[in-house]
Amino acid sequence: MTEFRPGRFQILPTIVKNLIIINAIMVFAQFVLSKFGIDLSDYLGLHYWKSEHFQPWQFLTHMFMHGGIAHIFFNMFALWMFGSVLENIWGPKRFLIFYLICGLGAAVLHMAVVAYGFREVEQAFAAYQTNPGIDQMRAFIEEHVTRPTGNTLINQVFDTYNYWASHPQSDMSQESIDAINRYIHGYTYPATGQYFSGIFDEATVGASGAVFGILFAFGYLFPNTLLYIYFLVPIKAKYVVGGLAIIELVAGIRDSAGDNIAHFAHLGGMLVGFILLKIWNKRNRNHFY
Image (tube, rainbow, N blue to C red; front, side, top):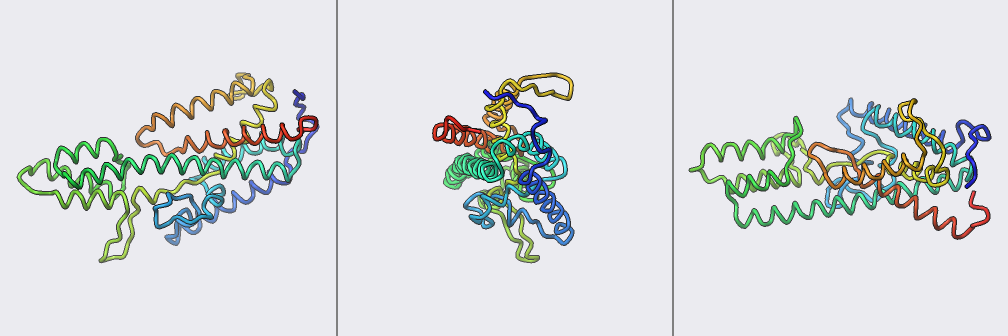
């Protein structure tokens, strides 16, 4: 394995620099447009294919959107730290291809995982509609509903259940079906025309899938390079990458309530990065770099 010597390389190569600039511009645009009531992630974030917000271009555009300053800072810092090395080794064209393919692959895996999870929700809702009841509603909520602060449609689900539980003589079957349907599919209030997003409308944003592909490639090519965790503890790159993969897998399987991180998108970026590196290495063993 070729030894990594950072002194040989440009500090901020062309593609990395432009990716950082584009991402920064998009975050600024998100901030400005939000002041006018426009959520840019509705148009450019990646949505579940059954959402009314879904568009095919979102597989690409979601990579240039972020959920806040901390989100973009850590992604762009990792892109600069590890991506600069790879771009100097591969050149701008190959690096950009690798980055985009990892991001697209991460999006595809994430979409598959989301579709699987939503399929379970749809099946549970279909079963509930055939046999609505207070006990069945409680079971549906415990299994499929989380309660982040300020979500109107989720609050309606809980309000309907709480009223039914305190008034067991009432028949809230249709009201409960309506509340759950709105929670899943979203709802437009006729009086105001205001639309409240359902869980199908949740957008995934961020360059994390592509960046995790970059992290994997760095660990794959330079496994023994020391990375300093919290700037103090030296750990070899291969152990950092392996540890991150395990953490993401465990977190993704656990799928804790309130966890809005697309863990399987991160793993998808790593997986696609691994496959792409293997293909490139097989095609050009003598001149991989």
